[in-house]
Image 1 (spheres, rainbow, N blue to C red):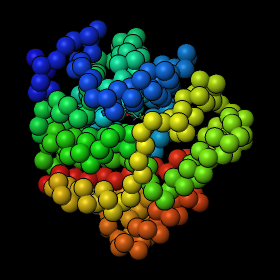
Image 2 (cartoon, rainbow, N blue to C red; image 1 turned 90 degrees about the vertical axis):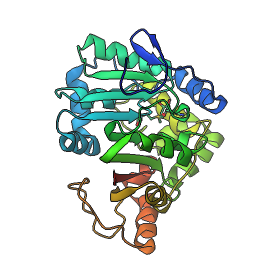
Image 3 (cartoon, protein in one colour; image 1 turned 45 degrees about the vertical axis):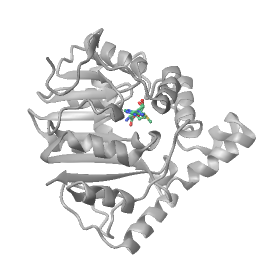
Length: 299
Ligand SMILES: C[S@@+](CC[C@H](N)C(=O)[O-])C[C@H]1O[C@@H](n2cnc3c(N)ncnc32)[C@H](O)[C@@H]1O
């Protein structure tokens, strides 16, 4: 008996599994099966994952805000590094969901060999709607819905499993902010990998090994399914599903206050939202792939 799923499942090597049947999702899983994302390095352990997480200001704030004894769902966890970060040193119950079993196998192996027991891995497709209603205190879904056939449909399914007063974080590729990546994608097609390595800021990072570089190139430049979104679109999703806007990155108003992203901020105006998303093209948000994030709280 597992409380957080409402449908009959199989236990495959300690991973709660549902058969992945959807053809679009299968395109994505066969893509990640070749280069699971993000990759683990041989020397990775509890400490290195903790350090990596603490350096990610969004993840570190989230972990601090959650506190203890909460149920957390990460949707599209890939190899589960972030979910593992949320589990380390807490008594929270973390559920890490992904349809790519090869990624989850790596995650499970890492959790087992580092004696991390407050995390469960769930091999499922969002669209199969397997999660128990009103179960989680927090849902983290970053960099995932734009790789599905119907991002809003997926959002509506996910949000059912969030408790009242629970928080959701959604990260998506931005229609304006991803312009630099879209241009680089054309240049990559024309001039190849060596040229891309000269113009992609992430690939210029000397600390990345060849596997990490290849995983990044595949994820950013040759993904089979990718869509682009705006803050206004996600605000509409929130409004239609009883979710109050809490904050966004970039800011929706001209306040640019990211010290506490779980504190309620102004939604700004259409004008401020467009300007701030357009500005992403010229700042680090745009150079790193153009992800924007919205946080909401269920009524
Ligand atoms: C770009 S990776 C992001 C991984 C991780 N969230 C991160 O930020 O590093 C996208 C992930 O979304 C997952 N995904 C794609 N379609 C999905 C679906 N229908 N249901 C659940 N997860 C899905 C993929 O398997 C993949 O692990």
